[in-house]
Image 1 (cartoon, rainbow, N blue to C red):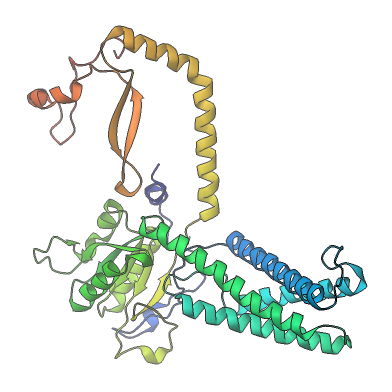
Image 2 (image 1 turned 90 degrees about the vertical axis):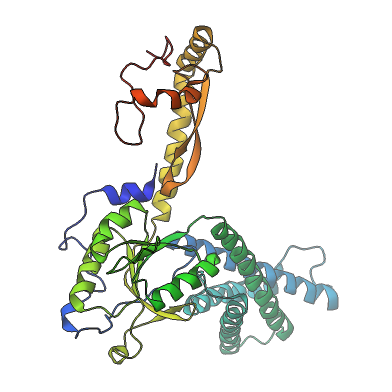
Length: 409
């Protein structure tokens, strides 16, 4: 099932039903001004469960690296606990307590550095620098806590060594995670389909940049423009937003032209009703005085007026339910399907299963399998039967189709 299309086919909310967080008072600004909104950078993954999972991974790596440096330090110089488990004895328990505190400090520092999200345009070097800052701050606070506790037995080598290893581990697993997620994006998973308002110079420049950087997860469907100029990528006028967005499975809308407040207001309301993300590439010479929060996508300054996060957890639950119910349904109906397949084989020549391409989520094609109800070469005969088609459009339908088998009646 096309989840995005189904989500948008539901009855659209009225403007009173739209959540009122980050309100946009369009009428309060002069024409061609930049609307104020809370900018949010697109991430490869979203949601509190994912952030909790990332924090848990950090905690495990901090404890593991601390245990390793603790063992190496005391086995190498003092043969401490050669036959004992990690953190054995009173001294070991003291170290373990401080390292538990250290893991909590690392998590808080990572939260302050926004390391539990994965913006698509954040590079490896930038993220590594952020990890260095987070671990450095956490290590500094740990030293302060140790000094305040009056403990003079803690090894400086263990503390500094744990900090160095944590930088390598925390930046290393994030780099591996980023490469995995970017490969998924390059394969078409989690890609947002973009519609750009205005096919002018700035709109085309933005489209070209997005197409040249597909790893960021944007796919340009086309443009809306006040005037159709024969360009096949101009899908309609500004008033065709609803039709174009639904027919092309649009996820986000970019406005790249200076627009009067009434036009932008209409598009904000329409985008909210269609559950579309809406961004404006603002006029750099007018409106920046409003101090609107901005972020950039490949150097293009944009602001989010509305952002609809993908319900990752809900989609995962739905997918699990789809697979489970389908599997149980196949088990329950297996005897009936087996009898039907045997009947088809006895009734006519050819396999019992018919395979054909179908259009699925966001227009992607997939192979559909069903029990055959027509003769084996039914597809090959379709062209010769076009004259008897009961439909006037591209669909083929005959009231008395001679290709249907006896069991298919």
